[in-house]
Length: 338
Image 1 (cartoon, rainbow, N blue to C red):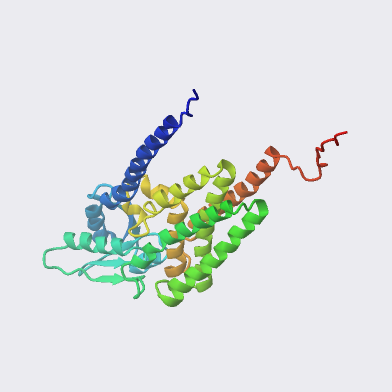
Image 2: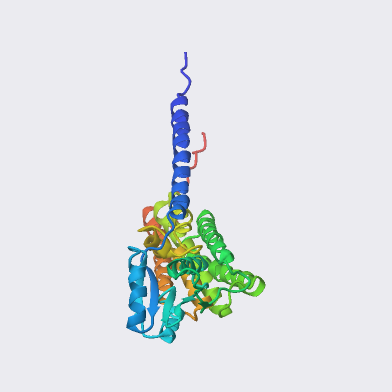
């Protein structure tokens, strides 16, 4: 009597694994997206205070009473505060004048922060006293709330994951794979700039610089995914996708600001390609490249490490499976009977 193969235990283990893995991923996604959004608040938010000491000191003291909310920078006058805003050193500034406080904001840096500063300064002003507000670097008219800019982060991350996955699944290796990833990033950057700048008008900087920034953001993600897959196998695609989409997107702070996210989420987000890409895009599009070096360097490091892993993984794979090309073929022939 033959015993049928025991297939039930392996199938049962797979069912249990899937039943556990999916809820864990759902919980992780909810935590990554919902927790930072529910804990949004200013945390050491760089804010300037300008004016003579006699008038500016009381304003500084009022802001410092909100423990840990603001990182106050002092400036001699309104012109210096404006320069700091345009250089992205601060998100805004309170100018102490004989007539009362005056608020300078930069909605291009973050419409959410600009609104938050207006509420904070007006709440501390004498009752019935209006606080004049000047938007030093306004958001583009086509995207006054920054919604379109924030919505561009996830598609770029998905495009990067897709590019890295396709290069891996198509069995491209080494230099050929690296060249393909760079080519894809160039095309994605150009298409994204054409849509966001030329068509929608939500970006207002130099077209070519924006296209390069968008392409570099895509390359940082795609090279990382393909590099992890080259070193870890197919599991690397999952690791890269989860890191870039599940963590990189909600931790990016593009829809609000990194200084509004709970720590260390804000810091981690700026070290991942989606967050660095969003900061770079703001700098080159609205601030003439101010503070662009840091995020550009972050993206370049991810891209270089990923492409290096792609080439290295192909070399290691070649060593593990020695080439059979050039070896004489072994032919087995049956001797004739008789």
